[in-house]
Image 1 (cartoon, rainbow, N blue to C red):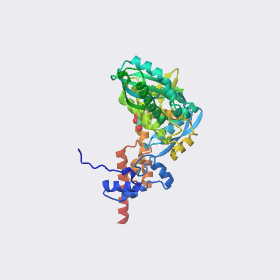
Image 2 (image 1 turned 180 degrees about the vertical axis):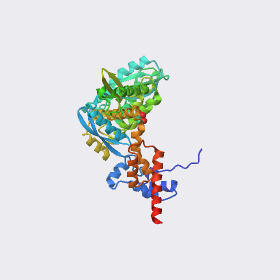
Image 3 (image 1 turned 60 degrees about the horizontal axis):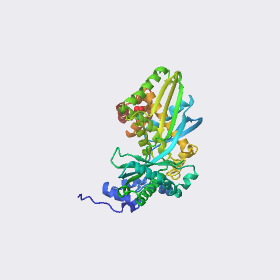
Image 4 (image 1 turned 120 degrees about the horizontal axis):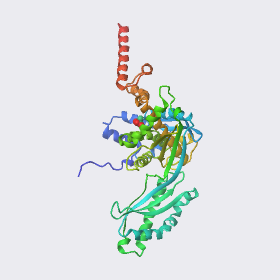
Length: 450
Ligand code: MEV
């Protein structure tokens, strides 16, 4: 048994008291930390309260940049897409590649289906045929007894689509699932689905108990009730295309060679999981940034995308390319469950703003926009990787981070930016040049003094 002391009632302390406690316990009671944490509080206490109440034990806010990527032509409409992300080159790449495709007809995005799924996972002891027949005989009760909970969703055109029992005893003896499919309209639907699944489990337990099945067949162990974040039936396809000849806007890059190399890059991601992981990470640079800005759950979105990328048994690229009859076609099939109502969407002021900026899209429109952001990001990454190399653009954007770390002055920043304008930015080269500048400045100062 460890002697570690458990802190009791921490969550009940005021925000100030929590800060004081962590400062005393972990930061040598140094009150500069108190000032520091408070300096990140919003100066409007009402806004701060909203943020405080999103989670437990909030002590301050954590900033990440909120940028916008203009020039996204999606299904004939131009969007300026909000992106919340810390990585320096992502918004720049999204904007640049959105403008590139705007000149070539833009992104064509289409939602293929919007079905979500959840399971009651349970153990049961008997013949599957008996279970299947029994569940089919009580199926109507799941729908009838949850009417109260589904009323609003039904009015919006959603609800429970289907319920069936799945035999998973091949994976684990006596393991079965009650699998339910849902339409949740503009809501992400997690609470709706999970509440219904818990209700279904109670109905199932009760009905088995009251049935005239054998004693053994009446026994059920509910393992858990939970939606699946894997939503292969909630999926959007986004595509760009142009003639191969039109694929390069750089006189130093031959369009046909570029198209071929681009295709090879996708092929490498399809056969090599080491590459596929980075390839898809780049796609999620774009996707997550919009998902976060619009108040959606980026962990769910990522988990779903990565499972989908492995659906063949091997982890592969989420994007595809085809070069045929002189045409270049590049697309993504993206399973993604997002909401435009509920959750943070009406609470978080910046999330509300993002939705307004996008023209208050419904969930399907938002799926279409997010897929375009992911596709643009992947196009930009592959374009750089197979032509100039990634570091040129990436480090150009990262230069300012390095200079800020070095605490360079405004004047030094301008000089260093100018110097690296036509060079590949490399960390050590920047540091050396910066030190050189400082040395020169010091020498000048000493000479002046003498
Ligand atoms: C960096 O955040 C993302 C890339 O590595 C993606 C890729 O390699 O495709 C540039």
